[in-house]
Length: 125
Image (cartoon, rainbow, N blue to C red):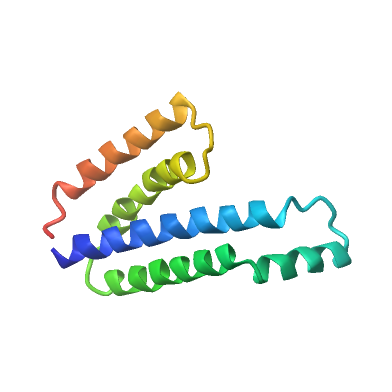
């Protein structure tokens, strides 16, 4: 039971982190020039953006939860199970970021879900 709780914590915190970082970078704006001055300006804008900070915090929660989970669960279970984050990220992209998610991407997300279900059949957790 605690294993699945940790998997869900990782999935949702990592997905939220990805959505927040994306939202923050959309607010910062497109990086079009790779000159040092422009890169520093973009970095400063990113570092002071609240969405970016929230995204990094969520990703840190996911990372340290992942480390904790690996201390007692098999990598061959943990890595595929946390791949559910791809599905949650697609849902976040559609619902929060208002991205146009194509049918092919939805089908890919469903295939990931089926693969996770298959792997979790014999997880023993």
